[in-house]
Image (cartoon, rainbow, N blue to C red; front, side):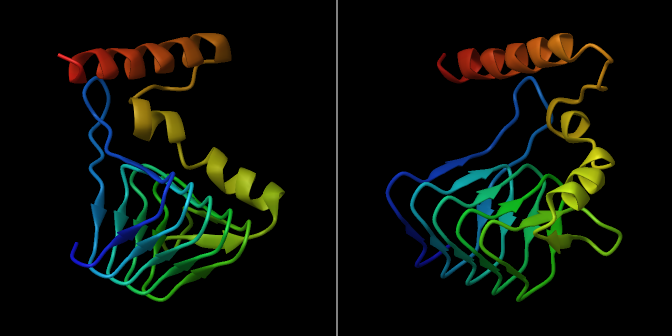
Length: 149
């Protein structure tokens, strides 16, 4: 978007290639703080992203949202306009788009149903986590090799 400010150390990347595509879009008048990480997400207009915020694949952040330092907007969460996610809080997919909480156990419970590996890697989570992580790393490595050509 127009008039976007991106501070030093921020990482902004789309994903795709060997896995489902997730482009990044950033609306007008956003501020992206230092060391923020945006991966395959969409930000509306005039969104404030503080230091070390993470916004993951398929997340949608509405206009005028404020994401506090160290907060995480997880895969598939959909924040309504003007939502605030406080410092070190989590926004995770919920029945109305997103649940914002500082309760790690509650966030983990909701994330278990969010299917991170299915959405990001098109992988069903096998019982063997080593195999899941091996296949995930292989997909990212193939994507990097494809981009470097």
